[in-house]
Length: 295
Image 1 (cartoon, helix red, strand yellow):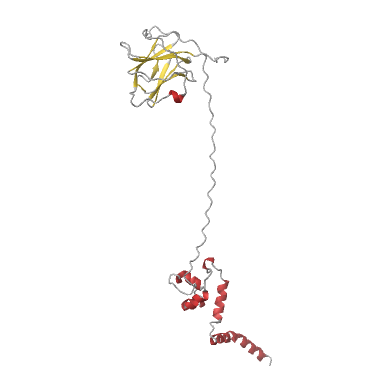
Image 2 (tube, one colour):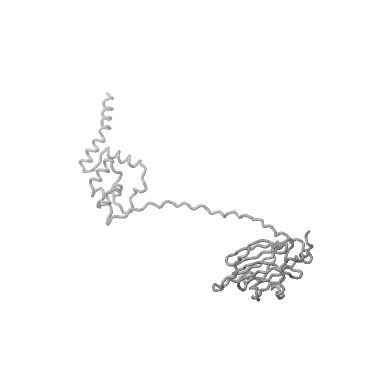
């Protein structure tokens, strides 16, 4: 006798969704059990921030103005009316979504730009500077040999002027002045000195002789081209010479077993059978006072 009420209660519970659906249709409401389950499943899904509607969006107005979109949302083929608007409704000018003109879709935030790696300073290299070799002990120069070529017509050369700064002592020759050419290098007799004579085709341009740390003597000839033998031994002496070309200039370097110091330099004009000449006198270098000479 108590089984019948339980069966009636079970039937009532099973038929409740059907009765509710019939009542909603009779009242003009769009409600059904599949729709409720579909909406509940859609709520459980993860919402994409890009599909969230902006302020002013009217979801109900868009679905009411577009019945096909509303049917797609009910059937689960479309998550919302705004999603349909993003995909195709905006291009089709579907009405009802916004009160006035279509609102622009907010652009996604820009991707962060990675910071550039820091620039590390390059390691500095320490170069060791070797001190210049010490000058050997000064000794008297060898006497001129009997076969040396004397030049008795040479007047006494003028003293060597004091050295000047390099910037002022190396003026560039004018473009209109032709270059001088050294045709020959020879030696001459001089008391207690080595006399070097350069034969040129024009008046020479020269800088004061400079004593180098290695004991050699250097004479720079601006605007001068060297056409004689560029290196060799000075006639009738134990000294050697070589020439360095630096652009439009030449540099004569004289070196021997004894360190040299400049004594005098002079430019001579043509005289009878001799042309332009540059005379350089050098003597043995004396050690600095207070510093004994090294053996």
